[in-house]
Each structure stands twice: as structure tokens, then as C-alpha cells.
Amino acid sequence: MVIRKMNLAIGILMAAFGLALQANAASTNVALSSNGGVATQSSTLGTPGNDGFLQVASRAIDGDTNGNWFTGKITHTNNEFQPWWQVSLGGGISTISEIDIWNRTDCCTGRLNHYDVTVFSGGVAVWSSLNNPTPALQEAIFLPTVAGDAVKIQLEGSDYLSLAEVQVWTTSAVPEPETYAMLLAGLGLLGVAAGRRKQS
Image 1 (spheres, one colour):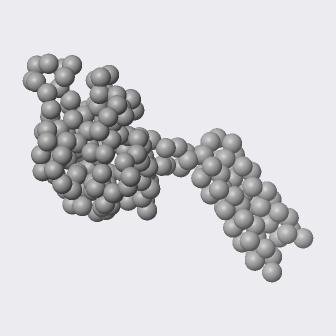
Image 2 (spheres, rainbow, N blue to C red):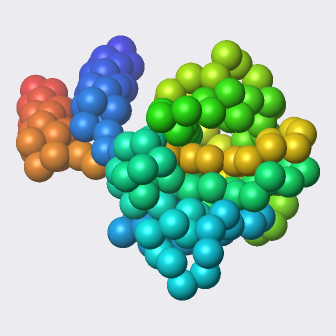
């Protein structure tokens, strides 16, 4: 009977510890260039040597969600069949929980429609989703915790592909010192209680 009660108490303590970890979970945008993300795309609209007009892939991982073409903050491919944009995630394999896609805002929002979002791991597709919603300025895609090292966005048909920002979120549990202290104190109290029961 005593052992059962002790096991129950330990189970409750560990469950509380798990809830504390979830409460303190930290999200990281592993697509961000400053976190090691590297972006490429099928083609680039613009004139080589003219950085102000060249709509390079890295603009979608610079941390700026401004979708106005005139600010020089968006990507842009040529008008082609199934244009794509891809980011190799910083840090290698990551457990992805959410992908946020920010659209162009000054015009042409309808171009980002009927597009595939694919997660790769070691060059192999491990998760894919066809998105054909009413074009929005920002689209949040929630994943069933998929592990991958690259994310690709590709149109189904022929058009330009423009993106303001792509964020790839991974969540990891980061316990605070107080959480560890709570667990150790609880285990200590259980140990003292067990010792007193043996002595009695």
C-alpha cells in the first residue's frame, strides 16, 4: 500500500514537471538567415548586379514580413511553370511544429494560390500539404511534429512566385531553474517520507 502511494506521488510530481516544461517551451524560427537558414529559388527576377531590383530568395528569411515590393523586401521568380522557393534549415534536422508564410501585400496576392508546402529530410519528402485557400496576407500551417531539414514552397501551375517571409518554427522544452528546484525538492520530500516510514 505504501509503495503504491509513493508511486502515485512520484507520478503526480513528474506530471507537474512535464506541464512546467510545456509552459516554458521555447519556439525558434530555424529558417531565419541569422539562425543559419539558406534560401534558394527556381529563378530570380531582376538584373544581376542591381541589388535593389534583384528579388533574391534570401529576402524571405531576413526577419522582415513587410510585403511591399517597393521596399525591396520580397522574393520574386520569373513567370514560369511550377516556380519554387526552398530553405535549408539552420542546425540540420529540426522538429517542425508550424510554418508561417507571408504574402506580397502591395498587389498580386492571388499569385500565391494552389501551392504545395513540402518538408524534406535528407532530400526525401517526409510531409506535404496542398494549399489552395483564398489568398491571404499570412498563412499559418500547423504540422503534426515533423522532423526535417528543408522546406519547399512550389506553385502548382504557371505564374510568378513572390514571398515576403517564411518562418519555420520548432519548439523545444527549456525548463527554468525554478522548475528543476521544484522537482528536486519534491523528490527530496518523498525520500524523507519514505525513510521515516521505514524507521517506524
